[in-house]
Image (cartoon, rainbow, N blue to C red; front, side, top):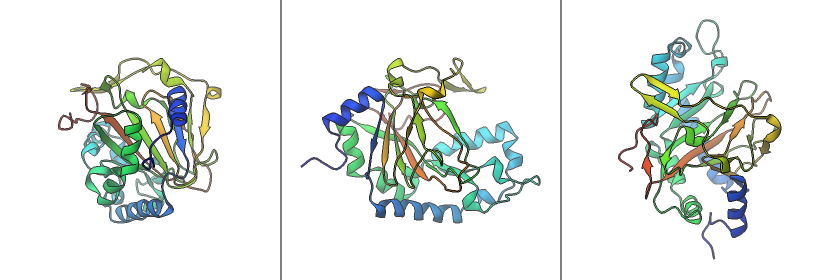
Length: 276
């Protein structure tokens, strides 16, 4: 009997052809509830969200410093639209968070246990990864009415190895639909390679080439029921739209790279020398 999470020949063929794969009912209702309950506890106990941090968001250096350090800990990012003119939150904390990241898989037992489960490992065994390692993780809220869009991008732009090896796992913790901001992707776009890289150096960060524009008609929606898992190739062009609906769209996403035969590229925004 195959291990939980093992991909069939048909699933592998679809993934290699299209650059994504939607695995329905990947996680149980109990696992989904455990992740959501734990995040509710983290948000309730956070101090970051009490700050009048719209002021800090206007200061690029402070924002960059907070963002780059988030790769090593659990940090809270809030929505601009959650603030009033006085710089204070005008919504409840739990409705103001954009995402929590980027090291949930390292510093929280509930998320760490789930991220390193056998079913997750089996996916990468199916993809012939020898020594996969989680490089970052995020809990995405996509708040009702104010959930921001994510522009078209490729994950290898930000999490690059030589040769490229990044794979994203995107777990729906609520039904992700066209109405509340599900993922969209251009099928097969991973075959055309990486379009641009974000480089971080002593002067900040920049993109080595202009970001290309894409035709919305090329994208297809990747809807997923709660508990469904979307596997995403690092070169796949994907995005999500604003959530203007009254329904949130919680998701847990983590990125994995191969460490055997690969090197962590210089200029990446986060440093992971200890893994490689």
